[in-house]
Amino acid sequence: MADRIAEDGSKVIAVGRRQSRLDAFINKHGKDKASSVVFDISDRNSVDKFVSDVTKQYPDLDCVFLNAGTQSQINLAQPAKVDLKNFHDEININFNSFVDISMKFLPFLMNKNSPSGIIFTGTHLAIVPAAPLPAYSASKAALSSFILCLRAQLEAQNSQVKIVEILPPLVQTELHDYLGEDKGRSMGMPLAEFTDQAYKGLTSGSDQVAVGAVGQADLYNDVLNKRRTVFENLAKMMRGMFPKN
View 1 (spheres, rainbow, N blue to C red):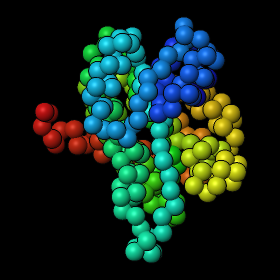
View 2: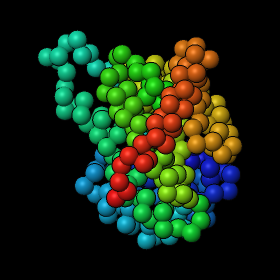
View 3: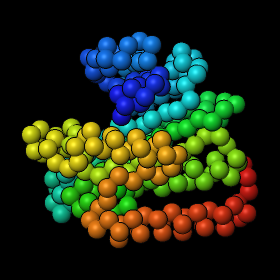
View 4: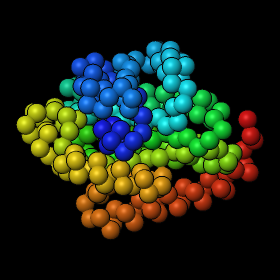
């Protein structure tokens, strides 16, 4: 997705753990369109410094795209074999780190005098969990709820910060390498196809970009859309019930 955004003319600040990949990205697009910062999203103790450094070096930044994640198969029916540290580490990366980073960037974005945004990559498994992937499904469900709440609260304040959620299907990426690289990276929608569809959704102005579905598309999309409607109705009802802090 970073390649597509840069190709479309936007300046991209790529963030990742691997310097070699970041260097390749800059070499591909040139320093006028691309720059990079080495950072591990799981390092929650360093988020304050990371956000401070980025916003000072790139004061024109107007959108934060959170697209990291990890996934593993966990058999809860064999509790003695469940590695609880790994379970919670997965939730930390997929949910807690996204909360930390978005909350730290948000004051900077809210203080801008022009529209800005945060884009979160979620998953359809936030809506319909996958039984073999309990930590991943639960972490993404928590993230999706957080996104809905964040969007509703900002809209209630007439904020210019737009909150966007992308819901991908199974995509051919390294996320599934725990199944073996050959198998894991051959399952699902080709990455280029997903990128094209997701980018079209982003440029359409939608704040919820669903690519593909889980199972029967019309049934799934009905659940997704009704969930959003019920949430928004509840959010409006509750605005007058709680004091503004």
